Image 1 (cartoon, rainbow, N blue to C red):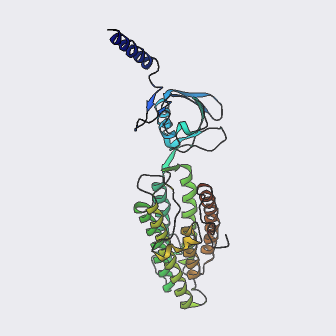
Image 2 (image 1 turned 135 degrees about the vertical axis):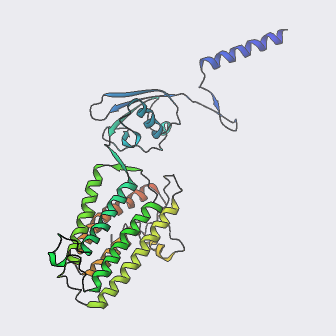
Length: 344
């Protein structure tokens, strides 16, 4: 009787403890240790005004920033997750969606700061719009539709075969980009600010029109060294186009579908990827080579200027990615340069 009475007291006390502290004790899958599973309180403030926008109670310790964005979206439907920038500091960097709450330097009451990134648009839509424009615009000049050149040249064709070759190369380049956007690229970020599409389209569409106007002009003259220069340029162009495509395939294979995993890219059995031994962003290296080939083929000043501007922009991107690789991977190959082997 005494033993039964004692057992009932122990069980009653244990039950009362669990009622009072329902989430304090948790056993891992193997039952080897106990962990504190205390919930977090999350407050989200406006990064500019410091006004409290949202308070979230009983947030799980293993909740990600992406999940917190979804919770915030329920209380503020106008700010969907892709539009949100959540930070630890008003002027700090945005936290990644995969960052886990309990791994961040915050207390049990976590304070985050919100910034509105503005209306967003998917990267796929941006790329399709950017690349369709140059393809169509160039063909309008190639076929010499009315109101571009003098009326007597409407729908006439050039007598120089390099003009037709240039059109094929230009069209091939942008058709390749469109197909890669649809079937090859895997984007680490799903969206970008809507305002960027106007800037990007102005750049691509404007340069396409400028180049096409002079290459397809009735008074255009072929390169000074004739067929030999054109053939050399064509070889360079096609070589770099194949190389660029090979790099895009190699980068695609590094990232499983639907993930944001980042790995160090290494050469594969494809010889075009061996440049990874020396360069962090060989897709930009091959892209530069393609436009150098097109410049040599057409011997056209607007093409040369487009190549120069593109090289400057790709160098900025390549340096940023190179720094990111060095920061993220301690064993990153030290011999690599951002875009040009041993130079830049």
